[in-house]
Picture 1 (cartoon, rainbow, N blue to C red):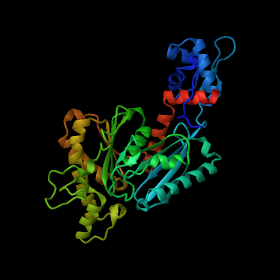
Picture 2: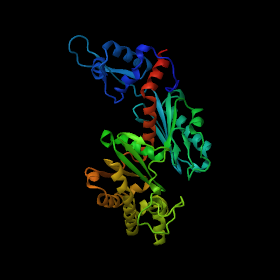
Picture 3: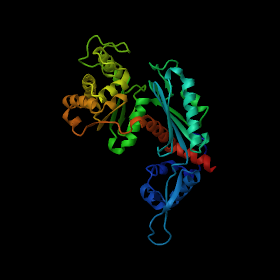
Length: 400
């Protein structure tokens, strides 16, 4: 049964989902400690904890020190109660993972996959990998609490449908949740891949990064915004479309694929840098070729990447003033060029942004790395299926 299904919960157990939120941090607690944290009566705590134990969402994990009499039992989130399927689709790859309810990756695989193959073929391929991973860890489709998927294009998050994605022919308005929902129980949640990278980065960094801006620099350029621990998507899901902001001093003849002149993506993304290097006589193809040239110490590549960092920094300076993040994370394939890209970004951001906005600002590379999209997809689903109402619905089904 899916956590999103509904059933009648006895009046005495209403509020069980709210109590469960105190256990989501993974800390083991006794009934007495929960009573102190929640200010609820001990009898109410006992009834709700017993219901959560019966549903499998909590499990006993030993005893606390006795203060006289029988030692009280501690309880904690049962990470293994259900699993989450997380899918990160790129232009040319599909990464699939299974995680537990704490977001810990239990199994994962990445394969070559062309997004232009169309939604049915690509999604069925990812679903098949997911089923194989479930079998590897002795879990079944019925154990899946929900599915999270990141797509390399604009997504209407409320419906899970791609919205005119430029590199995804055949995907516009395709009902991704309905297609995957025929194979898996639970909610199917869809978002832009960069949003999920930002959420994954926040998840891996923790509460010290509640105000975070992640910028993916690869074939395109996009940003994911986390404000006070919450992902900002905007009114229609297009927040963070950084690649199509005009660079003030861009050459007047640089035309972006969106049709505008001087977009950041047209001057600082992988294809633009590679074209510039080829014009200078260096045989470079794509973002990986640029990273390889930097690693080989090619002076032209080092200069081009640092200049791209400056162009990126000129746009990010405005973002820093506007959003006041505590950390700006540079991810994506070109971030593997390391300090050369970061140095260019820092040079301009610290020069052009207001002193108060940069006082404690960190501009760093990613810690989540290639797992960022997977971690974000998993976190997105976990937040949905362990929300108070979803927990109460699940408890009602399991204890009926």
